[in-house]
Length: 414
Image 1 (spheres, rainbow, N blue to C red):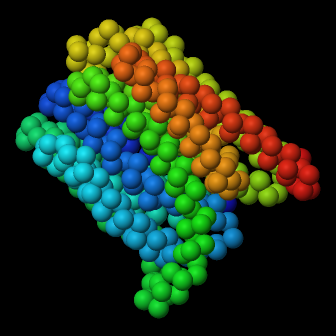
Image 2 (image 1 turned 120 degrees about the vertical axis):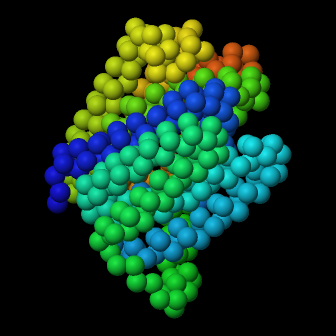
Image 3 (image 1 turned 90 degrees about the horizontal axis):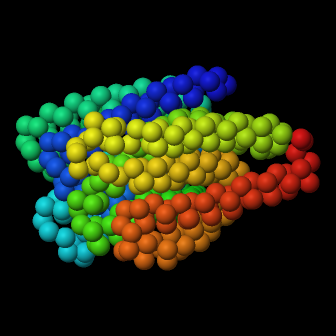
């Protein structure tokens, strides 16, 4: 068993590199192309991401918690191939149906290109994670991040085109999959045709039943990010969306730490849940403490350095949004805590419960978000998200403790 500290360190390094490269794309688009193009980029991502999250079905979580090796790696690759084709078709149909102009449509299709290769890398990451080989995940993310940074800076300033810049980002994802992930695979991809049809009739149906509720959960979680952005673009335009997207991206900064902790700990939590529930709860509380500390730091930083920091990293158009920045950091704290509680529920394989919780809280976000964004703009979006995520966190914590009591009654030691 690999050291948990080593796994967290590699995952953290990879997530920091990826977050830095993605933030660099935001900064480069803002400075080289303008706030409106940043709004277009945020809108395209908001439209495409939920579709891919739904069809991806959280397969990586199923892989990571498949401690009995019920499925082969080839099963996950084949299943992801089917669902990715569905995602491409759905994205194309949905984008054309909405009726955006040709520029936005081309950006959307470029984002689809990014998501396709990200989806297949995710399956390889699931294999590494299940074996607690997070070093491979970290190195892949670092490799990808370096290429994202290089391609985005060069293409944005040379072409002055958002479409070309996003295609460059997609090329970085392609290279990391082909040049690193596949080469580091610890499982040989042997996949005869008869294996596919046999599995399709039997195991794939079971895999669908297991993964689909998780896919609903992940999709709805992405819709939490997307829906307020769609409302902002509808009522206040692409410029307002660009500013909201730029500031809200700082939530991702803390998420690098939370994701590193969560992704590395999920296999360990899954084992503890069947062996010793006290170890499970101890690790869970430690993870919550880290999440809370990261969130509080963000709130303090936003309160003290808002205008100076935003004008430094972006443009003067971002000055005067201190209340929005602080509100989004409050939201970030709740998001981080909810992310950890979601990892705990995932390790317990309570995927259906997660789906129900996410759907209910998304309904709350939809009902509250529409009037709040319409009247208060970006600040209203932050308030609606705080309400929805706060409810989500509370219910998740209740279910974790309910399941602790259930495991104790089943004789899992404390």
